[in-house]
Length: 123
Image 1 (cartoon, rainbow, N blue to C red):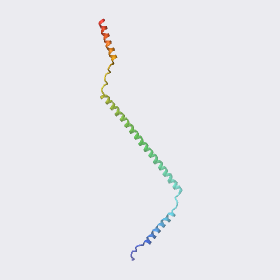
Image 2 (cartoon, one colour):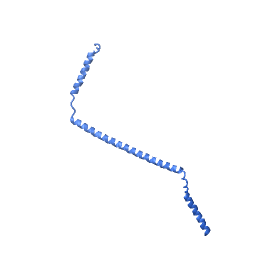
Image 3 (cartoon, helix red, strand yellow):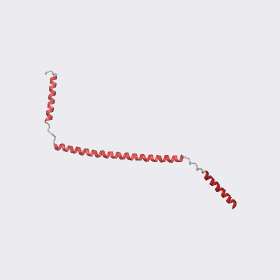
Image 4 (cartoon, rainbow, N blue to C red):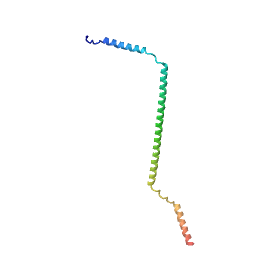
């Protein structure tokens, strides 16, 4: 039995070149794809893409609706909290001081009392 002979660089380069040429020849000899099959695949891909786009749009619409509902609930809760805070503040707020009569009003009241007293004394 013969001993193993290590291939030289030229042997390895020739082997690689032969493999490359064989692969290129195989690629050149490959039959062209059938146009009907290509069209059928493209139509199937387009239909699949349309269905996915419709699903994506429906999902985005559902997310937008959920977000809007959440915002509305948050706004309602905020309005209720503000109303409750306003009511609590109104309870804590002291009553306004009584209106002090002006000097003219006080003189008119005093004159009315004086006139009533005199009317009682005469009558």
